[in-house]
Amino acid sequence: MDWSTMIDTLDDLDVEGTTVGVRVDVNSPIDDESLADDARLRAHVDTLSELLERGGRVAVLAHQGRPGGNDFVSLAPHADRLSVLLDRPVEYVDATFTDAAREAVRSLDNGECVVLENTRFYSEEYMEFDPERAARTHLVEGLAPVLDAYVNDAFAAAHRSQPSLVGFPTVLPGYAGRVMESELDVLGSIEATPEPRVYVIGGAKVPDSIDVAWSVLEKGLADHVLTAGVVGNVFLIADEVDLGDSSSDFIYNQGYWDEIDRAQDLLDAYGDRIALPRDVAVERDGDRHEIAVNALPPRDGEAAMDIGHSTLAYYERILEDAGTVILNGPAGVFEDETFETGTKELYGAATSVPMSIVGGGDTASALRQLGVEGFSHVSTGGGAALRMLTAEPLPAVTALENGPRAND
Ligand SMILES: Nc1ncnc2c1ncn2[C@@H]1O[C@H](COP(=O)(O)OP(=O)(O)O)[C@@H](O)[C@H]1O
Ligand SMILES: O=C(OP(=O)(O)O)[C@H](O)COP(=O)(O)O
Image 1 (cartoon, rainbow, N blue to C red):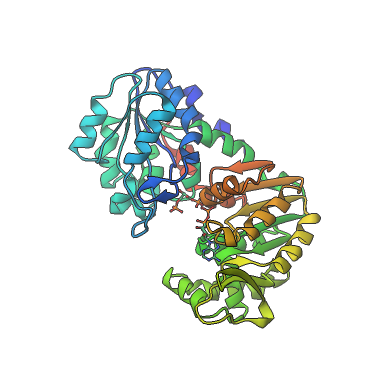
Image 2: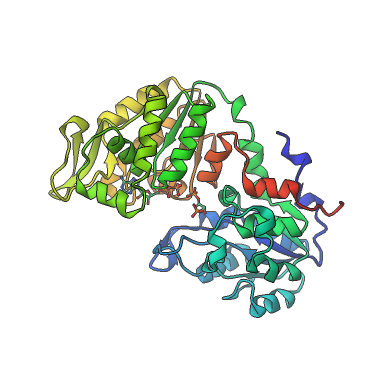
């Protein structure tokens, strides 16, 4: 699809003196209420600097974390960091669509920037709506009247149909920011990538990963799907492997128990193209200990924290023949040195595939931490990149396509 004829970009926006709501994705790892990684903020510097240098009045909108999570914090640290990255004052306002927020936006001068509060502090933002309904939420009805235009640079959240992503472009002229633009350029033509095509699904967002696996297997886009991380554990349980109580409780407590049935259905339908871990790593006596799947369950209290070396050898053989590999989600709890091996080696092997595309906030942070480099493209998005690489439309992009344009 040539998206560029359907969506305006910053090249089409008359910026000077215009008040622009800019949706970014700065959802970042948080350590004790502070930013543990600023890569997602740095990604948006080009878009924000350009708008400010061209005399725009910028109100930044973004989410951080999910309700109930330890990373569900205010955007105050993000505003502080943006101020350093943009080399200009960035005011933080602890409101999103109230009088205080509107007043802060109205009082912006050309070249000034304000960061509004975490959009998900407001409950409707964590729901999915069609764009017309999203346009009637408190957030959009409250804030849109003080904005002249809307820029979506939040490619990493573009697979969500939430008010800040699909509501604003329904009522305001919408534009793709520079991050959105480059991601759509690179990821827009999965069918043109070399085959065989391998999808690696790891990490912890199990429902999203299973959606993607269904889609790429059903459409014949994937020759192989390699499972790892919590996703791999869910598939092992679906394959009737006894992973022990610790891993099972973790999956249950995350609310992913029903995903086991979906994984089972997927294995029934496409089992010949889905690869499951052959061994897992647990912590035993303070060290890494690998257990073959046929020797499971582990001891009481031990959880599957990484894929083991036998799995790595198996997956690396599949990658040797791949034309394209698309990866999202760490293979294990990479934050702990004991369990970084699976992610480091699997992702390292993927860099030798002719076309290698990686996505995901935690994944990108893991790769930086582990010093793994050399991919064809590192996307700012995980779920969004995977969704795009299933050739499915992204709701936030569709909303930009269908919404009003300045020259309508
Ligand atoms: N076996 C595992 N058990 C528990 N957590 C895991 C396991 N494997 C990976 N994870 C966790 O998955 C998280 C990242 O997953 P996810 O958010 O899906 O990635 P991304 O942000 O790249 O899409 C990391 O915090 C990592 O610790
Ligand atoms: O981090 C994100 O996605 P990712 O983990 O797929 O990279 C985005 O900020 C979307 O967040 P969400 O998955 O809580 O909607």
